Image (cartoon, rainbow, N blue to C red; front, top):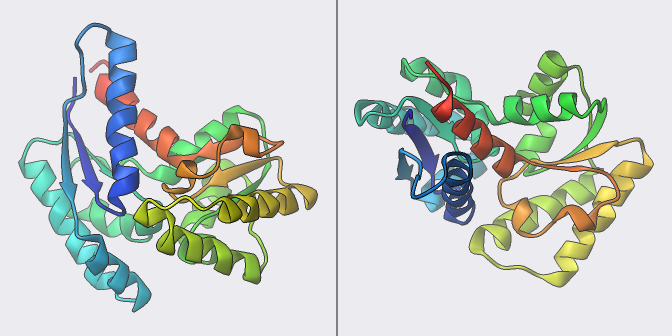
Length: 232
């Protein structure tokens, strides 16, 4: 079994889910007392969020690259950035290490492609929804049409993610907002919905949508398990 290197803490609420999903999957596949070989470096999210807000992406790339190198030095066989938004600096992080970085959009796009869908709605932080680093990868590698909500709804999603979900707070009215936003995307052609922030799965579940949901936390964690258990 290979060792998974996890860059967590963005937020720790979703990093906890990564750890749980990875270990449950390894146990389910291998049985008995088996668990995953993994290393996690949990960053200080307040510092990272400030870098995001101020547009200091080069600085955040340096930080995550340093973390990735430390995980590689400690014996990790791959790198998993446990957040969608910080994949904005994924190429810089990959360039900093010799081991592969498992990209969250690849795990998600592959599953959508296997389901035979072409048009998907994307929920996430405003960085993920509005910038090209995430959407373009889905379009170019998987041929998907990616739909995002209108500006006012993107602002709601961003606020709820940072002010509620990253703090572990679940608010019923926010759940309804998310459900309404999902329905709006379905009405304009979305055949499925990407939960493109690793905290959204804490709030929204399959029963909250009439089209398939693609939980990036789940898909990314399981991709890491596939890598760890793959035969040499």
